[in-house]
Image (tube, rainbow over all chains, first blue to last red; front, top):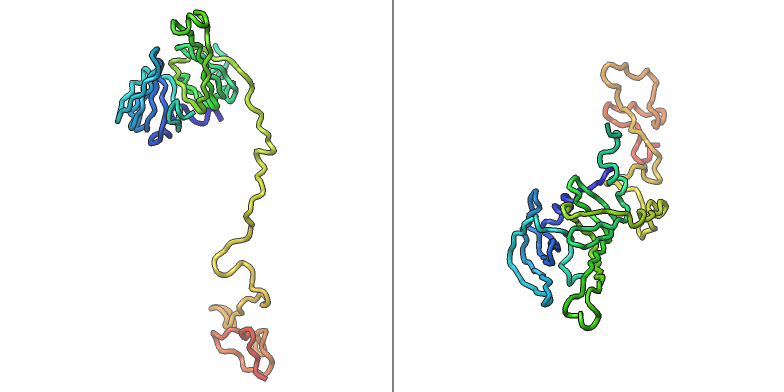
Length: 85
Length: 176
């Protein structure tokens, strides 16, 4: 009965679809998840980086990016970023 | 010695409950906990994020420095990395699921009927159920006694040759 699906299994199911990654800092990424490893390092494709600074919000487009799992805080499957909600 | 059920028991008892999770960057998340693992990674449904933001220099002159503003965002289904979890508290009980509504399916537009290939399970209407009679005795069986006629044959007719099925096909008139 326990928890029927583990958090990492849920991430695994997101491979190939868009995911919104919120880092520990005020930085967020939205992209198509290509893969991840045991440390939840992630490779994203067709990425938009959102950076909130005192000056305001900055948006950067990146073709492909590798995220260090150490800095990841939250993952939101199926969402295309802060502008989606 | 710890009680036998202590392993993950507290977290397990909180599953499906609405929790408020504080994380180490000052944010708080509320959501229904669907799953967790040994790293305290959490899956939270209908998640909302709250951030306390101090309005700094920019608004200091207008509003007054040190004022805190709470920013709320709706995130939906969230996977939270366990490393960042600072504390968990109960926000509310699990949403009540109506058992009757869960099991009862609404009436749909379809209809139910038996399905099969070709011939149905039932004999076609208008014909009596009929087992093909055995025209000849299987090997090792004695033949019919003299004067014995399979059903369906009028008296006075010659005994059917082997291989001939006893009953005439439907609609066939026996010879007069």
